[in-house]
Amino acid sequence: MAFYTQHIRRGFCSSAVRSLAIKHVTIIGSGQMGAGIAQVAASTGHTVTLVDTSDDILKKAVKGIEGSLKRVVKKKFADKPEAGEEFIQKVLKNVSTSTDDGAAVQSTDLVLEAIVENLKIKQDLFGRLDKMAPAHTIFASNTSSLRISDIASSTSRLDKFGGLHFFNPVPMMKLVEVVATSATSQETFDSLLNFSKVLGKTSVSCKDTPGFIVNRLLVPYTMEAIRLHERGHGSKEDIDIAMKLGAGYPMGPFELSDYVGLDVIKFIMDGWNALEPDNPLFAQSELLNKLVAQGKFGRKTGEGFYKYK
Ligand SMILES: NC(=O)c1ccc[n+]([C@@H]2O[C@H](COP(=O)([O-])OP(=O)(O)OC[C@H]3O[C@@H](n4cnc5c(N)ncnc54)[C@H](O)[C@@H]3O)[C@@H](O)[C@H]2O)c1
Image (cartoon, rainbow, N blue to C red):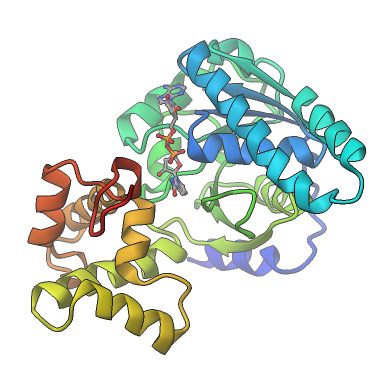
């Protein structure tokens, strides 16, 4: 416990402990999160290798980054379109792609994982990469709901392993949760804090508990909104309006669930329910289970609590 406190306290003040300046990042997984992190890292002068399982997926990811950069540039370089185009080309030049994760980690400062939310698959990946990456390389996971120490257990670099939890969409969302396990060294933790700062993000220091800060509060809240509706306390629409106008939230809990993905929420809740079956905050919802079984995952499938075109 004291160890965590030490990390957390140091996270908010400048520390005398040396930290590694991260120049090159290898990002494993080029989906929503991996591509977003790659865009931000490349835009802030890092060289990035983006890794996924096929060239087609990687091509799509790079196209997505280019599209997102065009939107950024439209605002940022409104009066200077040529400078905007130059910026896009400079950023894209910082991004290379690979389907060979072993080769992609052979000369890198940070391996940041953003693949499927599955403990065994993450452990296998890191266990393999641990044997191929240089000794100085820091490993970090972007997991939303798993314990970092459980993922790190497949490696022999426990002191060089931490969590970097970004939020979707990464270029827009300012927060990064930086997570230290009981084995993460101060140098690694400071390096991850510094990296987040260089990316232009605000970081908070978190204990290695499932959900860290944001999801640990947000997921039970959305689940309670669903259960409130199931108990007949209000329509989805009224609960959403109530939380937007009464609590000042930008989205209501049903809109937010559709945005995040009902499959993702169910996956997180099932995992936490298995860890703490008696905790009423993690109780099942019949309605959520039904929608997920019907493949209604929210915005990404065109229907969840609401229908989307
Ligand atoms: N989506 C969110 O809002 C969000 C927010 C914060 C954190 N996360 C976490 O980030 C991670 C990724 O989420 P996402 O939404 O980007 O998922 P996603 O499904 O959009 O992308 C995952 C990518 O990883 C690739 N992949 C899977 N296994 C791989 C492997 N072994 N090697 C290389 N690539 C592999 C897939 O092909 C896919 O492109 C998850 O752990 C998730 O919990 C998600």
